[in-house]
Amino acid sequence: MKKINKSWIGLLLCLLLPLLVFVCTWTPVSNAPLAEVHLWLRAPVFMQYLLFCMLPDLVLLFLGYKSDCFTFCRGGVLGLAPYLCTLFYLFT
Image 1 (cartoon, rainbow, N blue to C red):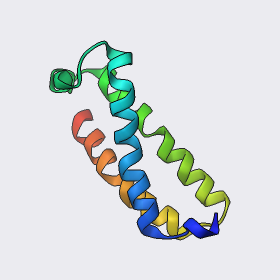
Image 2 (image 1 turned 90 degrees about the horizontal axis):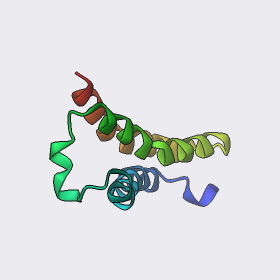
Image 3 (image 1 turned 135 degrees about the vertical axis):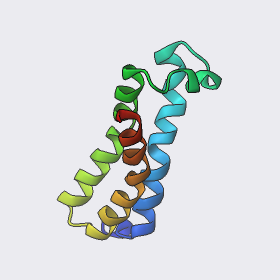
Image 4 (image 1 turned 30 degrees about the horizontal axis):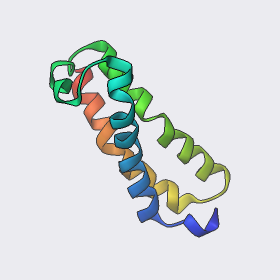
C-alpha cells in the first residue's frame, strides 16, 4: 500500500471511481438510459443513488487511513470534493 501513497493517485481514483460506478450501474438500477439523467436530478432517489456511488471512495479512504497512506487520503478527499459539492447543491 505504500507504493500508492501519492496524492495524484488518490485524486484520480476518487474522481473516476464514482463516475465509473454511476455509468456501470445507472441503467440496471433505474431502467432509464443515461440520456435521461437530467430528468432525475431533483428526485430524492437520485441523491441517495449519488451517495451510493461514492461508497467505493469512502472504502478507499478508510483503507488508506488504516494503512497510514495519508498522502493518498489527502488526494482522495480532494477528488471526493466535487461529488460532495454536487450533493450539497442538490440537497438545497
